[in-house]
Length: 381
Image: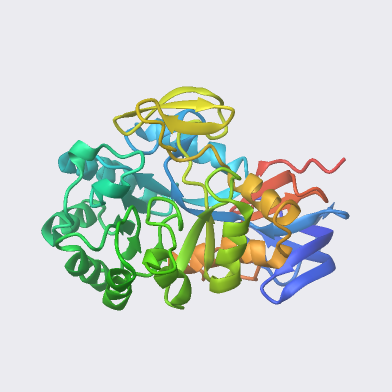
């Protein structure tokens, strides 16, 4: 058991707001409300202490893939993102053969059972060829509820989300199936109309997969899925805040219409996150990463990102001008709620896991703690 710690003197972001000269008490693996006499006091004056980040859409990092890698690969990718403040991560698969995805889901489920990942997100193969992005069109298929159920069952209770083009045959029935099994149905990689998207939401969809990307643009006569997803309070919208996927005005539009309580920052990261430029595979697709931007070698479509959530946090505050409290909601509390984990992670409250990030006044990471142990030792000089 790690010794008790008191992080003192920081600006601490709580669900009720920011506390100046606040403190966070860590007793073992949990946040506590009182400190034992022998607790180690760590002076973090001049810094921020925020909850650990929660990423619900992530394909890998550190040169390792969640989409087809070994257990060792997956753990390497998870650790890479932990170094950047993401203490809770959902592993996302991309389109592949159904049997391959089921086998990969079994491996990921073992890691979820161990607590290394928070669950599994299937992004494909049940998506639109019109909006396929970096998915292999030859492997796409309509969302047959029986096949959706096969993947959910292969995850052994650890399937957290399935992205669907809900306008395809079987789409609405698949949404209903997922809702009945407690799995998030996410609208994404879709060519749906406004009306079709409303139907999907009424059927039980609750998330917009990387809003704006891989869906029809907003039009004044054809408002499309973006309008339906932004206007409905039942929907949480994913945003990739890397400066490549979204113009700052689009991000502001989403925050204005959805509100901070309905935004979840994601990375949609692939292997190159935290690793560097070069050639990679995203599922079966070859990707070239240049200057931190990932694109398919064939066709040039954006292929995920090289984003880490600490960069998304810093950009949201320093470039987009969002309040720190809103960014914490979007990067920690809201995704934790979506995953059904808000009783354990997503905010700094007594009884919850001691997952936290120490940021300096420029919003760079200076320390990361997970379950009461330092992943990144505090660098406070």
